[in-house]
Amino acid sequence: MSSLRQFKATDLFHFNTINLDSLTETYNISFYLSYLARWPDLFSVQCTPSETLMAYVMGKAEGTGTDWHGHVTAITVAPEYRRLGLAEGMMALLEKVSEQPYDGYFVDLFVRRSNKVAIEMYKRFGYSIYRTVVEYYSGETTEDAFDMRKPLKRDVDRKSVRENGETFLVEPHEVVF
Image 1 (cartoon, rainbow, N blue to C red):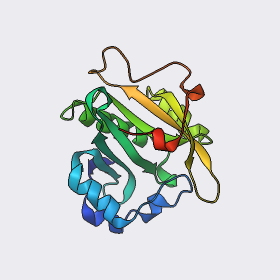
Image 2: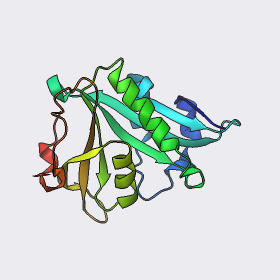
Image 3: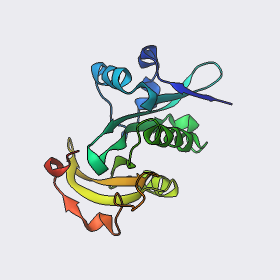
Image 4: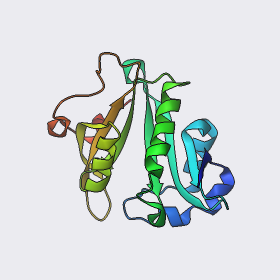
């Protein structure tokens, strides 16, 4: 049994074990706090009954016009709690909030091209590859990202998705909302 609740500032003192994954992007404390202050309803944590943090999702609302959407900035599950369906529940909540009250057209996220497990998981959740962002991730190794999207009810014409998105290449500076 676990519960899904809004992230609190004090959770920052307890989520290091969740972030200890090479595929999880980590940020400085002010970044997390800025999301918490601006989009608290898009920042959630999954906890055990004893309040041990199991996973979190952090998102925001951005864009203009038909590009207005929810964005998944980070989602991660501690290794010992994976394959329990936690990510699916957190993504469903973020999608629901992106739809109401934010009235977004779609939800998007960026995922490393090499992260096959995550890509397949997002596809099961209804996401598809919209485009490839060349050399999006930098550091010790440079890697492309897939911009994956899931249309919401407001996108009745499904303009936020396309066929064969992995073949549509863009540079990082072209990703603007």
